Image (cartoon, rainbow, N blue to C red; front, top):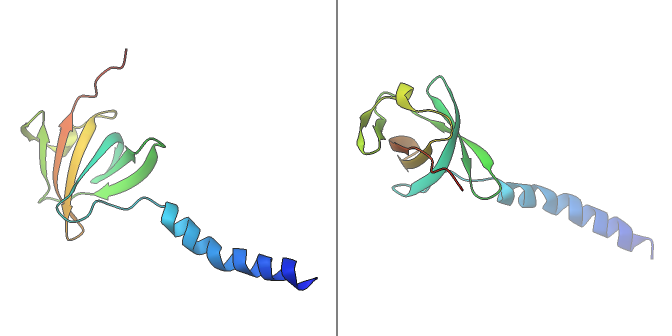
Length: 106
């Protein structure tokens, strides 16, 4: 009878890391676009908010990343918080970031 709570405790401890790993957001798969809102820019890294829960994810960029704003060529410095971003990554590198002004909800 005393073994049941002990076994249950060990099972919970063993499964906890897997449950936590499953809840972490993952960057987009190669070539797939990720839709997100820009939270802030730190150096060349974008902090974005994804999903209904607003989970924040860091997206690294580099000199090869192509930025567009409303479909026109842009620079990282043209991006502002609350913009809607469409991010495409390949092989762990951010290839393109297309920014659009967020629509105001009425």
